[in-house]
Length: 123
Image (cartoon, rainbow, N blue to C red; front, side, top):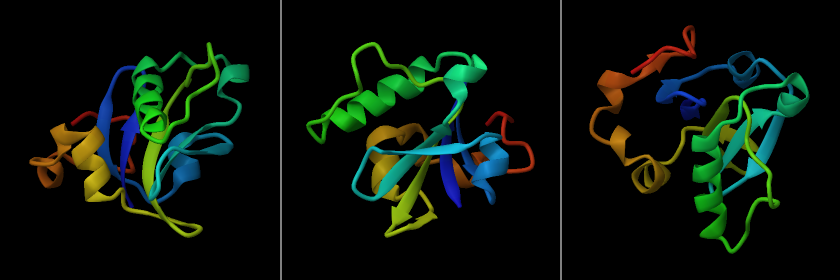
């Protein structure tokens, strides 16, 4: 599935086949939009993963558009994976979401996509 992966250092457009293997932890799903969600490591804070200010800022923007917010002082840590959702099934991140929140990937996605075998590779 086509996803956006946000780490503390990078934002990448990738084709991933296994969320668990890519995230390498217990998945926690954050409902951040109508047709997309964000997965983070449920135990990331307990593991001492690095704060991810980029993902925190993006999620705060997404939630604000829905009249919601994160808890005061809360922060995303480690990797955040944004994927599409249709009912209970995950799938490609919708073009509309990419255009609104990740427009830098609209023109070069097919050339710049990294492979799930190297989930921390760069574009």
